Length: 464
Image 1 (cartoon, rainbow, N blue to C red):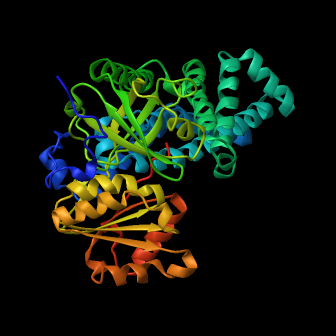
Image 2: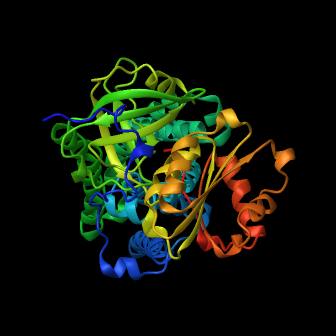
Protein backbone atom coordinates (compact mmCIF):
# COMPACT_ATOMS: atom_id res chain seq x y z
CA UNK A 1 0.00 0.00 0.00
CA UNK A 2 1.57 3.30 -1.07
CA UNK A 3 1.91 6.19 1.35
CA UNK A 4 2.82 9.80 0.76
CA UNK A 5 6.26 10.89 1.87
CA UNK A 6 6.70 13.77 4.33
CA UNK A 7 7.96 15.91 1.46
CA UNK A 8 4.66 15.40 -0.36
CA UNK A 9 2.49 16.07 2.68
CA UNK A 10 3.73 19.14 4.51
CA UNK A 11 2.08 20.00 7.84
CA UNK A 12 0.80 23.40 6.71
CA UNK A 13 -1.07 21.75 3.82
CA UNK A 14 -3.20 19.67 6.19
CA UNK A 15 -6.97 20.18 6.29
CA UNK A 16 -8.55 22.69 8.59
CA UNK A 17 -9.57 20.10 11.18
CA UNK A 18 -6.89 17.58 12.12
CA UNK A 19 -8.15 14.08 12.68
CA UNK A 20 -7.73 13.38 16.38
CA UNK A 21 -5.87 10.21 17.24
CA UNK A 22 -7.30 8.21 20.11
CA UNK A 23 -5.52 9.28 23.27
CA UNK A 24 -5.48 7.87 26.77
CA UNK A 25 -8.70 8.51 28.67
CA UNK A 26 -8.82 9.76 32.22
CA UNK A 27 -11.58 8.53 34.45
CA UNK A 28 -14.44 10.96 34.94
CA UNK A 29 -13.62 11.65 38.57
CA UNK A 30 -10.03 12.60 37.71
CA UNK A 31 -11.21 15.09 35.11
CA UNK A 32 -13.49 16.76 37.64
CA UNK A 33 -10.79 17.22 40.26
CA UNK A 34 -9.26 20.70 40.72
CA UNK A 35 -5.88 21.09 39.03
CA UNK A 36 -3.88 20.67 42.24
CA UNK A 37 -6.02 17.97 43.89
CA UNK A 38 -4.19 14.98 42.41
CA UNK A 39 -0.67 16.34 43.11
CA UNK A 40 -1.74 17.07 46.69
CA UNK A 41 -3.15 13.54 47.03
CA UNK A 42 0.08 11.96 45.74
CA UNK A 43 2.22 14.05 48.10
CA UNK A 44 -0.11 13.17 50.97
CA UNK A 45 0.27 9.45 50.17
CA UNK A 46 4.06 9.80 50.20
CA UNK A 47 3.92 11.64 53.52
CA UNK A 48 1.64 8.98 55.04
CA UNK A 49 4.14 6.34 53.97
CA UNK A 50 6.89 8.30 55.73
CA UNK A 51 4.78 8.46 58.92
CA UNK A 52 4.32 4.69 58.67
CA UNK A 53 8.10 4.27 58.57
CA UNK A 54 8.44 6.41 61.70
CA UNK A 55 5.77 4.26 63.34
CA UNK A 56 7.93 1.19 62.72
CA UNK A 57 10.81 2.83 64.57
CA UNK A 58 8.56 4.02 67.41
CA UNK A 59 7.08 0.54 67.91
CA UNK A 60 10.46 -1.16 68.33
CA UNK A 61 12.42 1.53 70.16
CA UNK A 62 12.86 1.24 73.95
CA UNK A 63 13.57 4.09 76.33
CA UNK A 64 16.47 6.25 75.08
CA UNK A 65 19.09 7.65 77.43
CA UNK A 66 22.55 9.06 76.95
CA UNK A 67 24.23 10.70 74.00
CA UNK A 68 25.27 7.43 72.38
CA UNK A 69 21.71 6.10 72.28
CA UNK A 70 20.27 9.39 71.02
CA UNK A 71 22.83 9.45 68.20
CA UNK A 72 22.29 5.78 67.35
CA UNK A 73 18.51 6.15 67.24
CA UNK A 74 18.82 9.30 65.14
CA UNK A 75 20.88 7.20 62.76
CA UNK A 76 18.18 4.53 62.63
CA UNK A 77 15.45 7.06 61.93
CA UNK A 78 17.38 8.73 59.11
CA UNK A 79 18.36 5.32 57.73
CA UNK A 80 14.76 4.13 57.66
CA UNK A 81 13.55 7.33 56.02
CA UNK A 82 16.36 7.17 53.45
CA UNK A 83 15.47 3.54 52.73
CA UNK A 84 11.85 4.58 52.17
CA UNK A 85 12.71 7.65 50.07
CA UNK A 86 14.97 5.82 47.61
CA UNK A 87 12.31 3.61 45.96
CA UNK A 88 9.75 6.42 46.09
CA UNK A 89 12.11 8.63 44.07
CA UNK A 90 12.61 5.82 41.55
CA UNK A 91 8.83 5.38 41.26
CA UNK A 92 8.48 9.05 40.32
CA UNK A 93 10.75 8.36 37.33
CA UNK A 94 9.28 4.94 36.46
CA UNK A 95 7.22 6.37 33.54
CA UNK A 96 3.94 5.23 35.10
CA UNK A 97 1.33 6.43 32.56
CA UNK A 98 -1.21 7.76 35.08
CA UNK A 99 1.40 9.90 36.84
CA UNK A 100 3.04 11.08 33.61
CA UNK A 101 -0.31 11.96 32.06
CA UNK A 102 -2.02 13.63 35.01
CA UNK A 103 0.92 15.22 36.88
CA UNK A 104 3.28 15.93 34.00
CA UNK A 105 6.89 14.90 33.49
CA UNK A 106 8.26 18.24 34.67
CA UNK A 107 6.44 18.14 38.00
CA UNK A 108 7.62 14.57 38.60
CA UNK A 109 11.17 15.59 37.71
CA UNK A 110 11.05 18.53 40.14
CA UNK A 111 9.78 16.27 42.92
CA UNK A 112 12.48 13.73 42.08
CA UNK A 113 15.20 16.39 42.19
CA UNK A 114 13.94 17.90 45.46
CA UNK A 115 13.53 14.46 47.01
CA UNK A 116 17.03 13.53 45.86
CA UNK A 117 18.47 16.38 47.91
CA UNK A 118 16.56 15.17 50.98
CA UNK A 119 17.79 11.62 50.33
CA UNK A 120 21.43 12.71 50.19
CA UNK A 121 20.92 14.65 53.43
CA UNK A 122 19.27 11.68 55.15
CA UNK A 123 22.02 9.26 54.07
CA UNK A 124 24.74 11.68 55.20
CA UNK A 125 23.04 12.18 58.58
CA UNK A 126 22.59 8.41 58.93
CA UNK A 127 26.28 7.72 58.36
CA UNK A 128 27.47 10.45 60.74
CA UNK A 129 25.04 9.81 63.62
CA UNK A 130 25.36 6.00 63.58
CA UNK A 131 29.15 6.19 63.44
CA UNK A 132 29.34 8.64 66.35
CA UNK A 133 26.74 6.74 68.37
CA UNK A 134 28.55 3.40 67.97
CA UNK A 135 31.92 5.04 68.64
CA UNK A 136 30.66 6.43 71.97
CA UNK A 137 29.13 3.07 72.90
CA UNK A 138 32.26 1.06 72.08
CA UNK A 139 34.78 3.60 73.33
CA UNK A 140 36.59 3.76 69.99
CA UNK A 141 37.70 6.66 67.89
CA UNK A 142 35.53 7.62 64.92
CA UNK A 143 37.91 6.23 62.27
CA UNK A 144 38.33 2.94 64.10
CA UNK A 145 34.56 2.61 64.47
CA UNK A 146 34.06 3.28 60.78
CA UNK A 147 36.53 0.50 59.90
CA UNK A 148 34.76 -1.87 62.29
CA UNK A 149 31.33 -1.09 60.83
CA UNK A 150 32.37 -1.37 57.18
CA UNK A 151 34.36 -4.60 57.45
CA UNK A 152 32.59 -6.52 60.22
CA UNK A 153 28.89 -5.63 59.98
CA UNK A 154 26.78 -7.71 57.52
CA UNK A 155 26.23 -6.25 54.04
CA UNK A 156 28.23 -3.12 54.94
CA UNK A 157 30.80 -3.29 52.14
CA UNK A 158 27.99 -3.24 49.56
CA UNK A 159 26.17 -0.54 51.54
CA UNK A 160 29.33 1.60 51.59
CA UNK A 161 29.71 1.29 47.84
CA UNK A 162 26.05 2.18 47.44
CA UNK A 163 26.45 5.22 49.69
CA UNK A 164 29.47 6.47 47.72
CA UNK A 165 27.57 6.01 44.44
CA UNK A 166 24.54 7.83 45.82
CA UNK A 167 26.54 10.76 47.16
CA UNK A 168 28.48 10.98 43.89
CA UNK A 169 25.26 10.97 41.88
CA UNK A 170 23.85 13.67 44.13
CA UNK A 171 26.95 15.83 43.67
CA UNK A 172 26.82 15.47 39.88
CA UNK A 173 23.12 16.33 39.89
CA UNK A 174 23.76 19.69 41.56
CA UNK A 175 22.96 22.55 39.22
CA UNK A 176 26.53 23.88 39.13
CA UNK A 177 27.89 20.44 38.18
CA UNK A 178 25.23 19.74 35.57
CA UNK A 179 26.10 22.92 33.70
CA UNK A 180 29.59 21.52 33.11
CA UNK A 181 28.47 18.06 31.98
CA UNK A 182 27.07 16.99 28.66
CA UNK A 183 23.51 15.71 28.97
CA UNK A 184 24.60 12.28 27.75
CA UNK A 185 27.37 12.04 30.40
CA UNK A 186 25.04 13.12 33.18
CA UNK A 187 22.39 10.64 31.99
CA UNK A 188 24.74 7.66 32.14
CA UNK A 189 26.19 8.65 35.50
CA UNK A 190 22.70 9.16 36.92
CA UNK A 191 21.92 5.49 36.22
CA UNK A 192 24.34 4.67 39.03
CA UNK A 193 21.53 5.65 41.39
CA UNK A 194 19.72 2.41 40.56
CA UNK A 195 22.79 0.38 41.54
CA UNK A 196 23.17 2.40 44.74
CA UNK A 197 19.60 1.59 45.81
CA UNK A 198 20.06 -2.10 45.00
CA UNK A 199 23.30 -2.28 47.00
CA UNK A 200 21.67 -0.64 50.02
CA UNK A 201 18.65 -2.96 50.09
CA UNK A 202 20.49 -5.95 51.58
CA UNK A 203 22.05 -3.74 54.26
CA UNK A 204 18.61 -2.49 55.32
CA UNK A 205 17.26 -6.03 55.73
CA UNK A 206 20.36 -7.30 57.52
CA UNK A 207 20.80 -4.47 60.04
CA UNK A 208 17.40 -2.77 60.12
CA UNK A 209 16.24 -3.86 63.56
CA UNK A 210 13.03 -1.85 63.25
CA UNK A 211 11.95 -3.88 60.23
CA UNK A 212 11.83 -7.04 62.35
CA UNK A 213 10.47 -10.20 60.82
CA UNK A 214 6.79 -9.31 60.48
CA UNK A 215 4.68 -6.72 58.62
CA UNK A 216 7.50 -4.18 58.48
CA UNK A 217 9.84 -6.50 56.60
CA UNK A 218 7.00 -7.64 54.31
CA UNK A 219 6.14 -4.00 53.50
CA UNK A 220 9.83 -3.29 52.76
CA UNK A 221 10.00 -6.24 50.36
CA UNK A 222 6.75 -5.14 48.70
CA UNK A 223 8.01 -1.56 48.28
CA UNK A 224 11.35 -2.51 46.75
CA UNK A 225 10.22 -5.45 44.65
CA UNK A 226 7.12 -3.58 43.48
CA UNK A 227 9.29 -0.63 42.46
CA UNK A 228 11.65 -2.92 40.57
CA UNK A 229 8.71 -4.58 38.80
CA UNK A 230 7.18 -1.24 37.73
CA UNK A 231 10.52 0.08 36.48
CA UNK A 232 11.19 -3.13 34.61
CA UNK A 233 7.75 -3.06 33.00
CA UNK A 234 7.38 0.60 32.06
CA UNK A 235 11.00 1.47 31.33
CA UNK A 236 12.17 -1.77 29.72
CA UNK A 237 9.37 -4.13 28.71
CA UNK A 238 6.84 -1.62 27.36
CA UNK A 239 9.34 0.21 25.11
CA UNK A 240 10.59 -3.14 23.81
CA UNK A 241 7.07 -4.38 23.05
CA UNK A 242 6.13 -1.10 21.37
CA UNK A 243 9.31 -1.20 19.34
CA UNK A 244 8.35 -4.61 18.00
CA UNK A 245 4.76 -3.56 17.32
CA UNK A 246 5.23 -0.11 15.78
CA UNK A 247 8.65 -0.52 14.09
CA UNK A 248 9.40 3.20 14.00
CA UNK A 249 12.01 4.40 11.53
CA UNK A 250 13.28 7.70 10.17
CA UNK A 251 11.46 8.77 7.00
CA UNK A 252 13.11 12.16 6.48
CA UNK A 253 15.33 14.73 8.20
CA UNK A 254 14.47 18.25 7.06
CA UNK A 255 16.37 21.48 7.95
CA UNK A 256 14.14 24.10 9.61
CA UNK A 257 16.61 26.82 10.57
CA UNK A 258 20.14 27.40 11.90
CA UNK A 259 21.02 24.27 13.88
CA UNK A 260 17.41 23.02 13.80
CA UNK A 261 16.01 20.00 11.93
CA UNK A 262 12.69 18.19 11.85
CA UNK A 263 12.75 14.40 12.00
CA UNK A 264 9.79 12.56 10.48
CA UNK A 265 9.16 9.07 11.80
CA UNK A 266 6.92 6.51 10.21
CA UNK A 267 5.86 3.07 11.38
CA UNK A 268 2.96 0.70 11.91
CA UNK A 269 -0.26 1.29 13.88
CA UNK A 270 0.86 4.75 15.04
CA UNK A 271 -2.66 5.72 16.12
CA UNK A 272 -2.44 3.07 18.86
CA UNK A 273 0.28 5.11 20.55
CA UNK A 274 -2.42 7.56 21.65
CA UNK A 275 -0.13 10.58 21.25
CA UNK A 276 -1.57 14.06 21.71
CA UNK A 277 -0.37 17.48 20.62
CA UNK A 278 1.92 18.93 23.29
CA UNK A 279 3.38 15.58 24.36
CA UNK A 280 6.88 14.25 23.89
CA UNK A 281 8.72 10.96 23.41
CA UNK A 282 12.12 9.79 24.55
CA UNK A 283 13.81 8.61 21.39
CA UNK A 284 16.69 6.17 20.92
CA UNK A 285 17.95 6.30 17.35
CA UNK A 286 19.55 2.99 16.41
CA UNK A 287 22.63 4.59 14.89
CA UNK A 288 26.29 4.77 16.02
CA UNK A 289 26.70 7.08 19.00
CA UNK A 290 22.95 7.44 19.57
CA UNK A 291 21.58 4.00 20.39
CA UNK A 292 22.33 4.07 24.14
CA UNK A 293 20.76 7.43 25.04
CA UNK A 294 17.03 8.21 25.16
CA UNK A 295 16.55 11.97 24.87
CA UNK A 296 13.21 13.80 25.13
CA UNK A 297 11.83 15.43 21.97
CA UNK A 298 8.44 17.10 21.56
CA UNK A 299 5.98 16.47 18.77
CA UNK A 300 6.06 19.54 16.54
CA UNK A 301 2.96 18.61 14.53
CA UNK A 302 -0.24 16.77 15.41
CA UNK A 303 0.23 12.99 15.16
CA UNK A 304 -1.59 12.01 11.99
CA UNK A 305 -1.35 10.61 8.46
CA UNK A 306 1.07 7.86 9.46
CA UNK A 307 3.90 10.21 10.54
CA UNK A 308 5.25 11.66 13.76
CA UNK A 309 7.29 14.86 13.49
CA UNK A 310 9.86 15.98 16.05
CA UNK A 311 11.90 19.16 15.77
CA UNK A 312 15.38 19.12 17.28
CA UNK A 313 17.83 21.92 18.02
CA UNK A 314 21.57 21.34 18.26
CA UNK A 315 22.08 21.56 22.05
CA UNK A 316 24.57 18.72 22.55
CA UNK A 317 26.22 15.71 20.98
CA UNK A 318 23.00 13.70 20.75
CA UNK A 319 20.85 16.41 19.17
CA UNK A 320 23.68 17.45 16.82
CA UNK A 321 24.04 13.89 15.54
CA UNK A 322 20.30 13.69 14.81
CA UNK A 323 20.81 15.99 11.81
CA UNK A 324 22.93 13.33 10.16
CA UNK A 325 20.43 10.48 10.48
CA UNK A 326 19.64 8.55 7.32
CA UNK A 327 16.16 7.51 6.18
CA UNK A 328 15.37 3.98 7.31
CA UNK A 329 17.20 4.28 10.66
CA UNK A 330 15.28 2.35 13.30
CA UNK A 331 14.00 4.29 16.31
CA UNK A 332 13.02 3.05 19.75
CA UNK A 333 10.49 5.37 21.40
CA UNK A 334 9.32 5.69 25.00
CA UNK A 335 6.07 7.57 25.37
CA UNK A 336 4.00 9.53 24.78
CA UNK A 337 4.63 11.47 27.97
CA UNK A 338 3.56 14.80 29.41
CA UNK A 339 0.45 16.66 30.57
CA UNK A 340 1.10 19.71 28.38
CA UNK A 341 -2.04 19.00 26.35
CA UNK A 342 -5.50 20.33 25.62
CA UNK A 343 -6.77 18.54 28.74
CA UNK A 344 -5.29 21.32 30.88
CA UNK A 345 -7.43 23.94 29.15
CA UNK A 346 -10.30 25.39 31.18
CA UNK A 347 -11.46 28.29 29.00
CA UNK A 348 -11.75 29.28 25.35
CA UNK A 349 -9.20 32.11 25.33
CA UNK A 350 -5.68 30.68 25.28
CA UNK A 351 -2.28 32.28 24.68
CA UNK A 352 0.49 30.02 23.42
CA UNK A 353 3.89 31.58 24.14
CA UNK A 354 6.93 29.90 22.64
CA UNK A 355 10.55 30.96 23.11
CA UNK A 356 13.23 29.50 20.81
CA UNK A 357 12.86 25.79 20.14
CA UNK A 358 10.10 25.82 22.78
CA UNK A 359 7.77 26.61 19.89
CA UNK A 360 7.74 22.91 18.92
CA UNK A 361 4.95 21.57 21.19
CA UNK A 362 3.02 24.82 20.73
CA UNK A 363 3.13 24.37 16.95
CA UNK A 364 1.17 21.12 17.36
CA UNK A 365 -1.21 22.62 19.94
CA UNK A 366 -1.91 25.66 17.73
CA UNK A 367 -3.43 23.41 15.10
CA UNK A 368 -5.56 21.26 17.40
CA UNK A 369 -6.33 23.18 20.61
CA UNK A 370 -10.05 23.97 20.89
CA UNK A 371 -11.16 27.51 21.63
CA UNK A 372 -9.62 30.79 20.49
CA UNK A 373 -5.84 30.35 20.59
CA UNK A 374 -3.37 33.18 20.09
CA UNK A 375 0.22 32.14 19.40
CA UNK A 376 3.18 34.42 20.10
CA UNK A 377 6.65 33.31 19.01
CA UNK A 378 9.48 35.11 20.83
CA UNK A 379 12.97 35.31 19.32
CA UNK A 380 15.91 37.69 19.11
CA UNK A 381 16.13 37.65 15.30
CA UNK A 382 13.80 36.76 12.48
CA UNK A 383 16.25 34.00 11.39
CA UNK A 384 15.57 32.24 14.71
CA UNK A 385 11.83 31.95 14.07
CA UNK A 386 10.57 28.46 13.21
CA UNK A 387 7.54 27.30 11.20
CA UNK A 388 6.60 30.83 10.09
CA UNK A 389 4.76 29.73 6.95
CA UNK A 390 3.10 26.81 8.73
CA UNK A 391 1.89 28.92 11.63
CA UNK A 392 0.54 31.61 9.33
CA UNK A 393 -1.30 28.96 7.29
CA UNK A 394 -2.79 27.38 10.42
CA UNK A 395 -3.88 30.80 11.68
CA UNK A 396 -5.66 31.53 8.38
CA UNK A 397 -7.27 28.10 8.22
CA UNK A 398 -8.84 28.24 11.69
CA UNK A 399 -9.26 32.00 12.10
CA UNK A 400 -6.70 32.22 14.90
CA UNK A 401 -4.03 34.85 15.54
CA UNK A 402 -0.26 34.46 15.19
CA UNK A 403 2.26 37.12 16.31
CA UNK A 404 6.03 37.39 16.30
CA UNK A 405 7.84 39.20 19.11
CA UNK A 406 11.38 40.03 18.00
CA UNK A 407 14.34 41.73 19.62
CA UNK A 408 16.70 41.56 22.57
CA UNK A 409 15.43 41.89 26.12
CA UNK A 410 16.39 45.54 26.10
CA UNK A 411 14.52 46.14 22.83
CA UNK A 412 11.38 44.28 23.90
CA UNK A 413 11.35 45.65 27.43
CA UNK A 414 8.96 44.20 29.97
CA UNK A 415 7.56 40.98 28.52
CA UNK A 416 4.17 41.39 30.19
CA UNK A 417 3.72 44.86 28.70
CA UNK A 418 4.82 43.63 25.26
CA UNK A 419 2.31 40.78 25.42
CA UNK A 420 -0.49 43.13 26.49
CA UNK A 421 0.11 45.17 23.34
CA UNK A 422 -0.42 42.02 21.25
CA UNK A 423 -3.14 40.52 23.46
CA UNK A 424 -4.98 43.39 25.19
CA UNK A 425 -7.09 41.10 27.41
CA UNK A 426 -4.03 39.10 28.49
CA UNK A 427 -5.20 38.62 32.09
CA UNK A 428 -8.30 36.79 30.83
CA UNK A 429 -6.28 34.16 28.95
CA UNK A 430 -4.89 30.84 29.94
CA UNK A 431 -1.23 30.57 28.93
CA UNK A 432 0.69 27.60 27.56
CA UNK A 433 4.38 28.47 27.88
CA UNK A 434 7.42 26.61 26.59
CA UNK A 435 11.06 27.66 26.32
CA UNK A 436 14.45 27.44 28.05
CA UNK A 437 14.19 27.20 31.84
CA UNK A 438 15.66 30.63 32.62
CA UNK A 439 13.37 32.38 30.15
CA UNK A 440 10.39 30.38 31.38
CA UNK A 441 10.97 31.65 34.93
CA UNK A 442 11.16 35.22 33.63
CA UNK A 443 8.02 34.76 31.53
CA UNK A 444 6.02 33.35 34.45
CA UNK A 445 7.07 36.33 36.58
CA UNK A 446 6.01 38.78 33.85
CA UNK A 447 2.69 37.03 33.26
CA UNK A 448 1.89 37.07 36.96
CA UNK A 449 2.69 40.77 37.10
CA UNK A 450 0.36 41.29 34.11
CA UNK A 451 -2.53 39.77 36.06
CA UNK A 452 -2.53 36.15 34.84
CA UNK A 453 -3.31 33.78 37.70
CA UNK A 454 -0.66 31.15 38.42
CA UNK A 455 -3.21 28.33 38.05
CA UNK A 456 -3.82 29.48 34.45
CA UNK A 457 -0.14 29.31 33.42
CA UNK A 458 0.80 25.87 32.07
CA UNK A 459 4.40 24.97 31.31
CA UNK A 460 6.41 21.81 31.16
CA UNK A 461 10.13 21.10 30.99
CA UNK A 462 11.47 17.92 29.39
CA UNK A 463 14.93 17.97 30.94
CA UNK A 464 14.80 14.43 32.42
